[in-house]
Structure formats: structure tokens, C-alpha cells
Image (cartoon, rainbow, N blue to C red; front, side, top):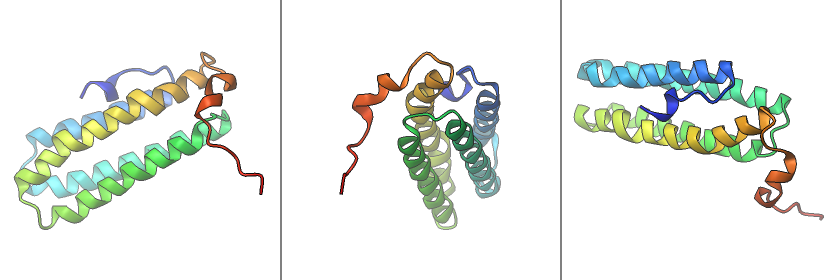
Length: 140
């Protein structure tokens, strides 16, 4: 895990990313029987982090919050699918999802929308920097 251990500059977010990365790293050393409970713990940690992160971003009025929420929903849905598959998947398949697929999804999220959102929160970007990224608003 590279990206989730990168410090973005907001201590609360950075701590939570490190905690999630530590859980993901436990996958490699976990027995087959430990994988489903570990996946459940990862799902809980990710869900708690997303709620906290969204609250911070609401407070800071991050312009891309709705996009951020959409990515959170996509990741939560993918984790739910992994949890559903855990009961029927071969342990090797579940381990692959937990060591490759899930970390890559989280890494991509951190490297993109998390980084941009934090840059706004830290004052390195302004609302004007996001003008081209907003969906058009319907007037009727």
C-alpha cells in the first residue's frame, strides 16, 4: 500500500488512511478463515472514515463533495459485493480481492478526489479551480 499511507496534510484523515492501510496489510498474513472477518472490519473502518471525511468536507464546503460522495458509495458497494462473495469464493479469490482490487480502489480514491479535496481544505485550491468540474445545474 503506497497511497493510503501518504500524508495528505489533514491529520484526522491521514490517521484514518493509515489505519485502513494497516488493516489491508494484515490480509497477506491472515489465514483463509480470518479473511471474511477481516474484510468486515475493513468495511467498518472504511464506512466510518467516509462518514467522518464527508462531515469534514461539508464543514469546509468542498466544491466536489457530491463527486466525493459518489466515489464513496461506489467503494462501499464494491466492498459489499466482496463481503457477499466471501461466503462462496475460494479463499485465494477473496485474498486477491483484498490484496489487489480493494487496495487499488482505495489508492485511486486517495490519489484523486481525496487529494483534490484536501488541497481545497488547505487553501491550495479555490472554488474557481473547480468551475469546469461541476455538473450543469438544471434551471427547471
